[in-house]
Length: 567
Image 1 (tube, rainbow, N blue to C red):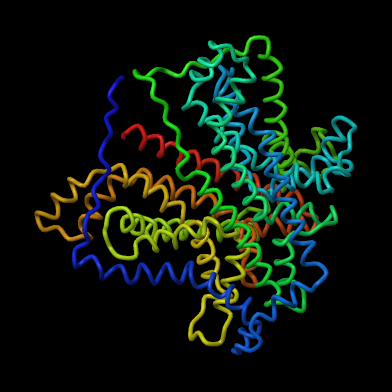
Image 2 (cartoon, rainbow, N blue to C red):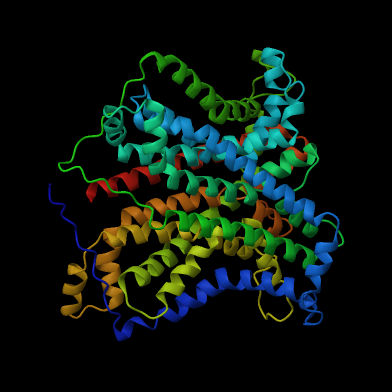
């Protein structure tokens, strides 16, 4: 039996006395970003008159919300939608992931890239693409004479649109798990007489069940949190979810703050329950096989299944990535949707809406500026927070870690509601409400987990020798952080900051809730253009944002790969 050498975990450095002074502003910033909005959602749900400065009639809003005839249907629709998306994502992603992980798939990297595209396309933009493609006189009917509008604007159609955006979570989880495990144990079972299906069911499937369960729970959470797809398609399909109803209670008069808070709390509890269950599924479920000498993972040949498998991958890639992208880009370059694919119908006129001095250019500039500010703020807070959690012995670092992880499980609509409740009060001498600062707070709260998790992973790979040597020679904690630790984790931090920038530049739901009058972001511009009938202008903006996001996410992936290669 070959000996397995384990690298010792990096030592945790004790915090020096001078390291405590900057912990206070760090905690204050995290409380303002995370704890304050979440706390006000809970308080407003408990005390319905809190916005008027009264603590009267506690918990009465729960009874009022629960007796409303639409509350239980909203909860039921949300659960049914989340479960349906999770099950269909597993049904679609599991077989594709198994083939990718166990077999020699022609063009494997190309399929991976195509299945990453749904993460690049904002869900609301993909929903608009599906409307343009499948509605009456849409692109599909112009090309093939087929009209699938009735299917799209139904519960099953909304589930299908959402599934095509999130199933890659299951696909990549299963394929990467199987690529690491290999098929050697299943081959041993077959040597002893088990058939291919029996060896898969009894050997391979139990090993990947944690990955399947965790990714299914993640798709459930993503589905119940998503606003764009249910709002764009669900209203025409005749059903509402918690997330769309919360937005309606803030946008329609009379504004129902207590009711919106109760629904936001219910949605947050659903998302948190799924997130906690996902972490419990993953906790302690790592498998390790002892096979003596390390051996390369050998993938099997597809044989006679080669062309059917390639056809299946092609159909899924066409539906998930190519079709919505085709609809978005084609509309951006077309004079009219009804004009079809005639040469005279193609134009660049819609991109003039993004020219200097236009509303589109202003919206794009606002989004890019907010995204840059969010990236810088979350990058700085994320780096310091990760260092405190991983490299110090400060009391409360476990609570700090939990606090920074909380936004990862919270729907964006809940954060938006919390920020409105927290800052739209007369008690504050200065408030960011009704300024661009409220958007910065919302983006930073939602996206802070990205730099923290990336940087934490990088810090755990670093030994403590260089830091200890610097301390022995009298370096302060701040100097150690800036001169030693930061350069070592810079690739991971920079890649996470690029991801934050790309995601913040297209965020929709909190932008719709919180944007002050006269301030537009790129996502609001796209949403309003579609509602007003200027679809080409909106899709031109969508095309530009896709190019920016794709370039930044590609750069982030290169930085992450460079960091992994360096390690």
